[in-house]
Image (cartoon, rainbow, N blue to C red; front, side, top):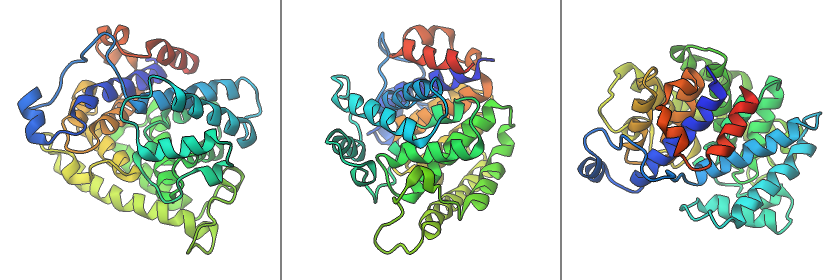
Length: 332
């Protein structure tokens, strides 16, 4: 089924489909693209945003690290730093990237320790829009996958909810690639929130928890899991309603912050579990951070259905096709 390729190309397809609608209202989207939003990739290549660019950066560093075991925080951290700084300085970094990512990456480029470089109070969706490769990478223990998914987020977004949402995104991708039924996913994510509520990955996160008003690392990370649980409540309600026609952001949030990006991306996928193009179209036709929402929906759909579920002609036209194929082929 080539699920890793399906997820990597799927996130790029969603990103490209949602990019033209990111700052539009629903009324503007319907006027320009019709009732159901954009249906095809425009351009040759079809351009993506920083979401895909940074997901590729995360993935390529992972490839390098996994080729030089053992996989540890000390090994991967400088690799991610270098890839993020390369992204910062790339002439292609002109796709309206988030201010948090830019600020933190400038600090990384200046050589600051990452716990000082990160934006401690930010839980923007940049924390988890790029984490899918950590879910797809083979052979990681649950503890390593959790720590790595949180660390890649923490390099730029230091808020505990950004960390927790990133871990949930990575595990959702992994579980779907392993064959979990989409209908079982919300309950599994909820259980993960409860099980991990007091788990602080000190080996991966170091002293990040030492922020004003925080007494213990457990109290720091618990806030993130609690906020994710709250948005999963809204996801359950929205899935039960099954409304495939309305703006998904009305149910689970606009996606500018990490837990809402996770929930709304999941909602679009769960409303169209066997229709991957329908899932990313629903994400693109939304009033919020449509490229990130559709990007996450595409990663989930691709991990579930594999590469063959996407329109065949798209793979030749999507930007960064060679890098996406390299990652997918390595992990399929």
